[in-house]
Image (cartoon, rainbow, N blue to C red; front, side):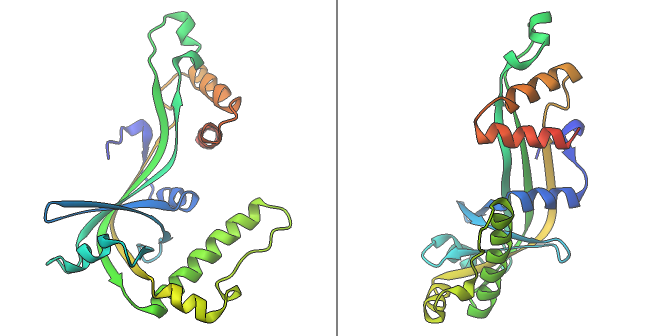
Length: 217
């Protein structure tokens, strides 16, 4: 990832926090000239340096990973945390000298590592339970009088059948890179102009980026 100093996230803990905020990532692999990408909801284990997720059994991506001669093939997982367009019209400097151009503000995390597959019902059951508990807790925190759903709420035979239709995947993290491009390279006036412009927008993407901008000061 291209990470100019102004936008770099040097602390791995902050990068993990970004994944926790936006845990849907794209697992990318290149095996024998075949490039695959699968969008998967992940759960990050920062203590053990792992990402966990699952494939649909019908997805051929996991079979290509399983068939590789490399027992633990290398992959990249890309997390598109937030992003939105920034118009030059938001810059006060536009009126001063006009030397401004459009850009894009965004946050992203790239994880590189080796992958292991888990075609084991109990491993997958633990994963699905952890994923569900994490996301239901987040959902409940955002809503008033919301009752969280649990895996055990569904009939056990139904859950068992669903578990057989997925395959677990675990990425052992070799490197994690975070980037927050949030107008840090602009003047205070221009940055304030961008923030005001985004905060006035009804677009949720603009609101997410505005919140991220406020968090970096």
